[in-house]
Image (cartoon, rainbow over the protein chains, first blue to last red):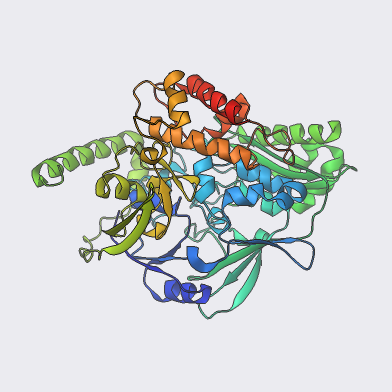
Length: 317
Length: 218
């Protein structure tokens, strides 16, 4: 691990200002993803600003009838919250489908949103990777791509966003609250938070340098049956090949987002109008324009079948 | 080994050599050509300043001065000489480094010691002693919950914490209902222990040891 200096922030604005004004500085909270990447020198920050002491560790009711989840709420505590289990089951289910118990106890809400891709070429510093080093190329294109993206890709990057939690947040229309280096707060809809790779796969989110996530808010509950169906190579503790987050109402209408298929949680609102027509019609619109590789073409039918399984389960209940 | 530069250099050379051959094997010619040109070596980073850290480990206050890069795992093993906690993968994948911080299990390899200022930490040495085993340690012995023993301290710390998580109502991926209180069934324990890998494959005996303790506490 490269040497770095370390300090604990006194306030959110202080943390944002320090990271914005110090070259190559990063926030650290849970650290489960950042330290992993620092050990292999994919991440080489020269300064870390620890934000664990900032108090964003509560889940509170909002005046609108929703929930405001502090950025530092640990994944286990979010999945275990009685209100989340009752009203936002898709979120609880998504969180416990990811990582291990030890990691969920440490990882934070904001850190989970910001976790980096598990593309093997991003992890291998001997390989070209436009996400790790702009302009160096993409070894995944034409390489081993079984786990990688099938839609929203570019000629520069076919990495996936690896997380589960954010896929559930996408169907729940969550909003990300931040504060920047000038102390200005803003709200970013989750739909706009993660970016497609385009020509700048290094830029993964809408956050400005030094902008700090303070909370994620959920609108008031929408009812319905909640599902998070994750298909992976092992029964536990593995990243998704494909996952389906869904909230399905009694009349068959609903919301659907996919994980494991794109550089961001993949939701196409227009496709949801097809839900009464069945999973094939939804998947056709959701994955229109997919450009899978030879290795991961199986993800297209797998996504449709996983969605079919979820919709069948909803009908049977 | 740390005091022997010759050995460490030759070992690094071996590692670099094997990494290079792996690249040749895995990279297409086109990808290799697209790789960025070599840049000048960066200036050496300034020597890191040690930071004071105070931890309460197994009931004892420990004041340390650490390079900020020191993980909680390395602080426990290399600085406090509590070598019960093991370094397996050092990347949070195997669970051998599992300890409890403020009563909650974490991977000590993926946490910096400086992130735990003032925290209370329990390692395998704090759970029981050879003369007075923790009930979970005794159950692992009784049910043959290990072979080589390397993953065992992490398994036992995790097992103790898992039963507490079930007691506190933390849901898991295999919980049928999110609103009912989870039960310490075999399938629940297996899912919750998936962050602890055992290369000897003692899983079924570990689950039996846990079932015995879960039954006693029911």
